[in-house]
Image 1 (cartoon, rainbow, N blue to C red):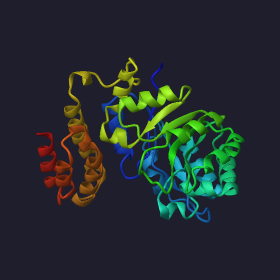
Image 2: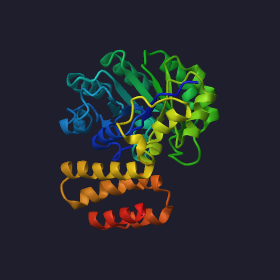
Image 3: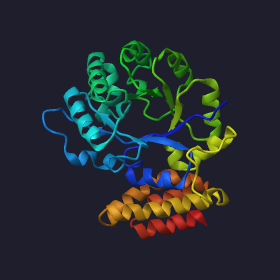
Image 4: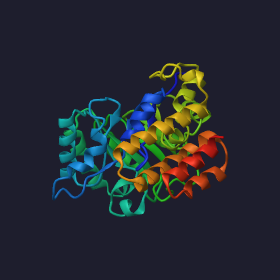
Length: 323
């Protein structure tokens, strides 16, 4: 069995351009990433250029797919035009965001409750980004039966692929991803399907790939943020060399040493683009909220990081974590 292609999932406020670039530079095995979403707005006014700033950092890399969220087809076409002009040939529509303030406006996973609005967005996306338009979905917002009922609609459009997170929106990230529900809907799709949800270890990837032969890939967000070498270890579990390959000399360094070096380099990257200690502290806390798992020291180290009031206090907490 061949190792699945590994995608980095979008985590708002975490998997931003500095994180993506540093991950691709420091680790192997991650084939591509979907960027955190650009909000479309209503289409009554132009989307501000700053909304695209993060993803435009990756223009021309071929490694990152921009993502948008909204329900206005005109705004989607506008965003697609900006991204095409920047050199992107792929675009993803977020139909999975579970946050209430998003879903209750009929966006993200809330869009799955409005068949007509979803159809208009699919039509606009496929026309605006021909051959390169994909969607990221959940099972539904409230009802896990929503997605199976929407598959015929989705199959009516030439989607590049579908990313499926088998939870409902109201579940947020609680419980376990419902692989049985995924098993029922997976064979119904005409487009290639990427599995997303609770891939935290090579064993998780092997289980999912074994149960669902024919998958187009596996997407991991929290798992890759917690253990950036996850894609490399997934390749190893299948007896393969990671592709793309890790940087030279990486194999000679331990996982903790590499994670520490990754975090240190990423802090320098953040310091160049953030203004002042408060934004830097906030970004580092978000990072270490996941990355502490690479050091397997339990929750005490994380609590000390979360209580840090300055970047220097956080660095001391991280040093203790690494000791």
